[in-house]
Length: 448
Image (cartoon, rainbow, N blue to C red):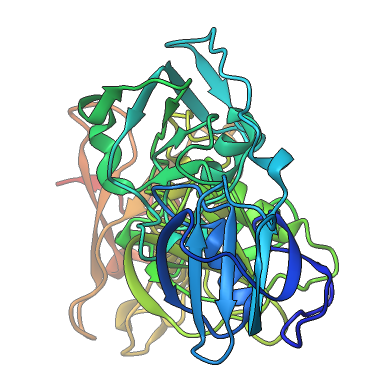
């Protein structure tokens, strides 16, 4: 862009849309080629509006600095025949930039891809009237494109979502000849109409990504290629974007954030439905504030200052075409395993407590009044007098002297046995194993 021209010097000016103007101070073209007029703050504002003028191509503009008004004129008007008018500035657009662009279209009905991967279906000599993402009263997001490829690239990076374009190579409707279409143009096929002058349109082939953050795992920590991220389902964090890019899945999005080795990416927002654009992964330099938004997921990069103690950790999904949901099932399986471990621990402690060595013997055996509890350990099979028992109950009172036991025989008609402390202490090994008693068969084991 050249130096500001508000002070009116004979110089040039290039608008943000790329249209170049030659400036003529204190001059005007009157009563010729008028289109319409509008208020303007200064010369630059006047020429910017001319470059974006909708419906009819504006090739020249005259700015009245006293009234702060801009008069738009068509492309036939030049500086030739200008009159002197103090406080006025005449801007004439570079006529070579208004030369019609090539109108040949040989790929009707074929697909054409933007640089960021978004596919479009192209329709030759057709247009879509209306459904503009940038209406006539707010044309700032319209753009000039020398080719349809450039127009598709503009659509693919637009926020909010652009669902297609109409492109006018004739430039008869204005220098900004790329018209992005809004989300209501999802009825694109019904909105197309025949058109001349080489006009063509293209429909974006948008496919929503899977919502990989169901509420059931809200708060889960997933592990990316480098770091871990805590998920907040149904949440957006507006602003603070480092960049935006397309991601096929939540996993792809958080991996992009994790790839920032300088750690300037503090988190990422993934828009599964691409509500705000095809580039649906927003890398954040600040976490900002939370806004509820269905289909959005905020993934907070875990650092020393924000790492939680959550045990629900799993790996991030990266392929939207994968049918596996193991990363979602991971927290559920983990919880089940934790329950099993807890129950096993309780069982072990109970078995350990019930399997202590004889803490005291009965009245008839050792002269005491305390309960007796027996355990033993397998000591070999060479002694045929050893019989294998498993204790199933303890004494119900301090004065009882017998125990009911089951045989450990692995047969359906296994007999029942009783150990009678009144007939003398039982011989057994002094060590323990799994609640099993090994007793001399001659010392009181009998069928009950």
